[in-house]
Length: 143
Image 1 (tube, rainbow, N blue to C red):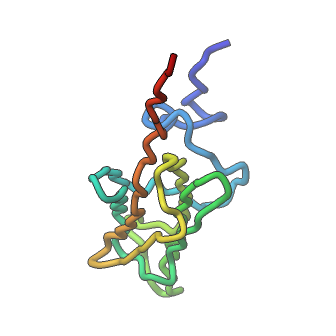
Image 2 (image 1 turned 180 degrees about the vertical axis):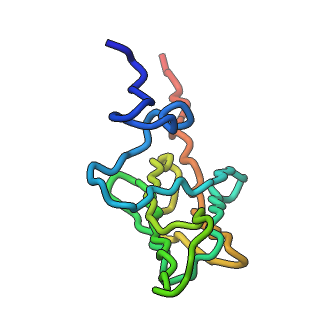
């Protein structure tokens, strides 16, 4: 049995080669699962996530903090409504949804997460707390 799914007909599509761990739709509808492109950088003060979401508005995107310091970003693209008298020559802009999850490090302050959306880019800032250094005390030995 091949580790790569069949790309001719049934099974998962060639997209498996791009992202083998992507979730797939089990129904035969025309919904699309969209892969939102994300950059995650760490500065001395915070973890910063930048998500490209062209065409989406604030109400289309949801940012959640799940148990275990997991950041979840999800959203929906709505399909264009087709007019009965329109002839579609090419259809590349489809609707769909996405969900991305990231396990944050221990130093993340999840209660202080901030998000803003500007020009189709969602920026999420997760401040970092100071790393507590282990308490060390030198004990004098008398004798």
